[in-house]
Image (cartoon, rainbow, N blue to C red):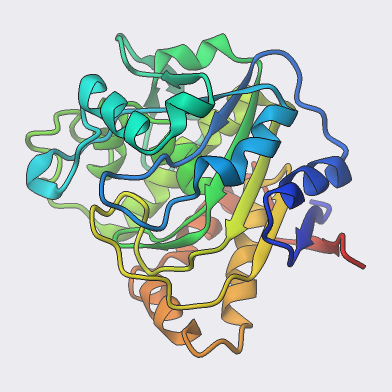
Length: 299
């Protein structure tokens, strides 16, 4: 497979998102869904509406989210549509954008997994079929289970419905939030299930998907954490690509090659969860490549 192009800038201002999109030269057309992480109630690290507004306005996009699979007992406030909408309002999303909770009403859209290692099907919010293009706008950071979160996690856990999130986390054993967290799993199989699910969404949109990863607010914790650890590294920059495997690999390389004093803390989180295995599993499925050409648009 040829090297994928990944465009990069150290400029972490909101206008740089549009600069990257224009440098990529890939126009998203029709109804454009913008999948991002709107932030759990209480989280301080998620990307703010004012930061992403220029690029969402540029593509005339609709912010899309899905309900989560963890309730109040796990610090969750977005596990049902009513509560989720309150958090979206509190975080400023509904006042700035059209917002669509894709699994607000069932039934889910079932996507077949082609040559998956763990899953045979993936359950996503059914309203995804309203959109012809997808912009995946990810905050790259650590994650308590996956080691890190980027484009592949947004494609898999992010686009999955509440039931679909349970399905991935339980490695295809349960869609019930009441018991999916209690089922014993092999950790690497969970990472492989994420790769399986990510492939279905990438293939669903085919040539009509673009990925942006923002390496800012680099905490070891995800935006899904009610109380996240503060960032441990300085901001690195922002990337864009049409390849979710390449962009996540490029972000990992940036972190691993950093001389920032907080680098070891984030790398320990990634390594302790074997996070890079998700990228390896996705590359093995063939919907992206770890081989990339990094293009600095500031030069």
